[in-house]
Image 1 (cartoon, rainbow, N blue to C red):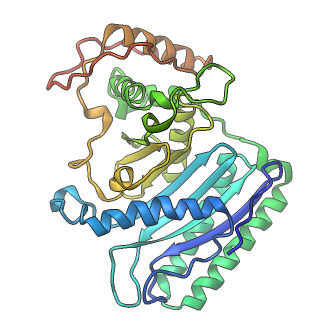
Image 2: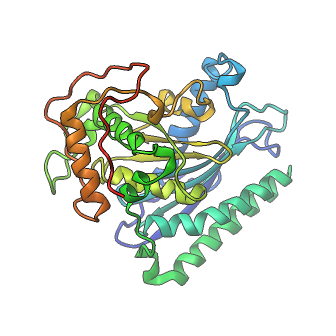
Length: 344
């Protein structure tokens, strides 16, 4: 198949589907994977992420309490001006094999992320419902084609509105005051510390540059699990994407996975693979929330984080600098010895 390279100066929308469905005896013949980005998403999430974990038996080896029943996720991936909004759900092939999901993914380029999520998600939900209700491969193909036309019609009708973000998010303001971050906001401090500790390679070398701090092997993808703090899956994905923009370079790939019926969100920075996508079927007994890991934080970090949080909540300087020298992390069964009181 000839893959198209979208013109990043003009907004465009593409829609593809892959995975398992009863209309096919094995994996679906790829539907609409017209761009390199959609091909890469399939490889990262499905071929490497799901496939390697299935083939290795990684999920089956988990105790029942440490493994979710199946797949039911909103997927929002951002890489520069490229965005993918996807829906992933449990499915089976025509022979009744259920270990792989079905995935529908919309690739948007040149639009605002919240516009893409707002337009794509309801249509992807309708597509999912129709695919679940049918065993016909032809109906699946027709549904994918129809949904693609709807998305492109919406883009054409939006005009310049597709570039606009009508509901700008101050992620630090929202997270710092959320109940799931604890009464004194200690959960946000733990998240900031883990991001600094594990994702510093994705910080910009200097303000205004396009280069990351570290290249090569040290730039391995990193995954963290955070509590839900939004109002529904779409808001959840946008909130955590906005948060990561305060932490890593805008050009760094960020994948947010929102399990619809669970209490957590998984955030992956970098080119994800099987190790990071293990989270798709791992419960909190297998992968805990970062906010529940009792890090002992150093006073210097708490001071820097406190200044960042206060400025960000006031709408100033959404940028958190990395410490030039990272201290060690100790996990101890006790509360943080020093928690900065967050201004309400």
